[in-house]
Amino acid sequence: MLRGANAYTGTEFLTSTDERFRPVNLFNGPDGALWLIDLYRGIIQDRFYVTSYLRKEILERGLDKPVNHGRIWRIVPDGAPKLNLKLSLASASPTDLVKSLADPNGWTRDTAQKLLVEKRVAARTPAVATALREMATKGENALGRLHALWTLDGSGALDQATLLTALNDRDSRVVAGSIRIAEGFFRQTGQRGRGEPGDWTRAIAD
Image 1: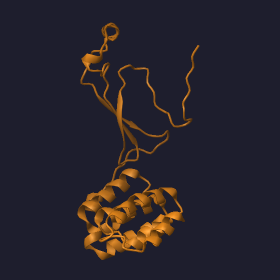
Image 2: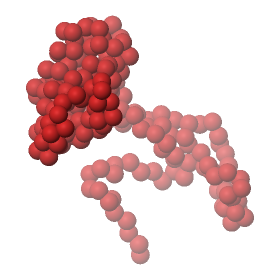
Image 3: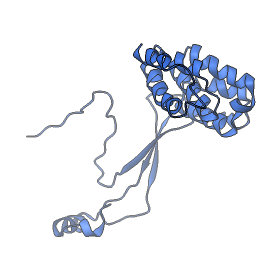
Image 4: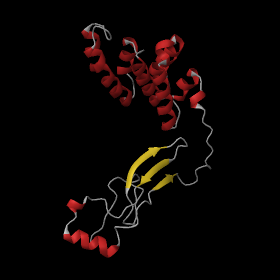
């Protein structure tokens, strides 16, 4: 008898005995829930890859129908509060968007970063750039520091001092992001990252 077990305890939480269940994508929603896109089709192979054996199985089990029955699942933890969305990021002030970069909800953080970068607020408003640099270097939330760093980079407002500080961050995720961003400074030495080479070597080595 064969038995199966989850490869990662506590992480593989979704399964189905329905042969038509086809999860194709996952999204973190604005409500903090996990939204799953289910294609819901019995067969997804191109006809050129359907062998005579597969064709027989498909017809016997009726997997060629129905079609056009895709579903969206909203997955929440047991005991999660009732959905109550009160979102106003589109009309939020730049200051509030900066604060939202440290929000517990990943969707909120991503959307706030997207809006700040698209509007290039940091490049046009010194106060916002200062607030982002403050969060990137001194923010209590590591993900907030990381989002602030990428927001500065995407807005063209990132300076060398902020990046050097981030390279020495106490959180490995921030350091990893800083190294990726630093590549731009190495490539554009005439415009960004004008410091002495030793500054970069010491920062990365540390």
